[in-house]
Amino acid sequence: MRAWVAVALLACAGCAPVAPYQRAYLARPDMALDASPGMMRAMERTFSAKEAANGGSSVGGGGCGCN
Amino acid sequence: MSLRLLALAACLAAFPAAAVEPGGAMPSISMPRLEKPAERFALASLKGKVVYVDFWASWCVPCRISMPALDALQKKHEQAGFAVVGINKDATTGDAERFLKRVPVGFTLVADASDEAARAFDVKTMPSGYLVDRKGVVRHVHRGFTKETAAALDAEVGKLLAEKP
Image 1: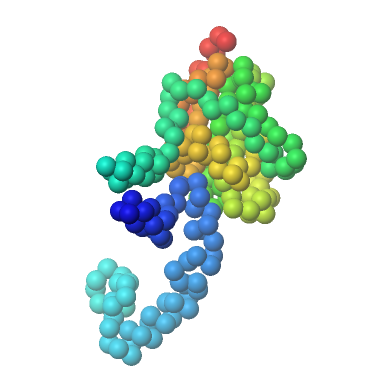
Image 2: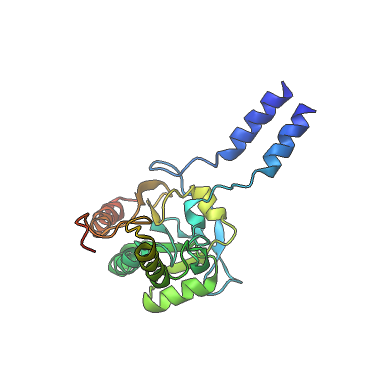
């Protein structure tokens, strides 16, 4: 019984290791975290201005607070 | 007890074949040619030559340096008995063809859609290159590629070509 539970758990594992030579699938444009980097930047800019949350998502510049 | 055996089997299954390192034999495999998939190309057919087996892909950034460098290297040494084999790791042939239009090369190109070659060599990095001597023994492994790699490779190929078969 316990063995069957273990087999079931192994079969349910959703993560698969991606070998270095299989990264073609990760390099596809539709696999990018932000599909449109330009649009993402504009959205972040608007968000930080509206919410007074500059640097909330990622920090631009060297910490001078001038951008 | 059976649970422990099962866990052990699962762990062992997670480890692939041992990586090809200097001193090891070149895996004897055959793959379809990239341009003519109906035709197969066997690595064993190059025995007696110094061979550089290179794993490349259009999405691999250092391959933009390595492919022209390897093309130049083959042109320089092919008369002396040197050959380059490029094993493509793109998901579709179209991606490889688009890359080759920008970076045309003259050496043998093969496809490895089934990952058979990549598994046989246990490729750890893209690009990975294996320099094989005339007897079929892997002598140098290059993981990654820079301009320095190209210079080192040129010297290594010259040395291996000078060795008597």
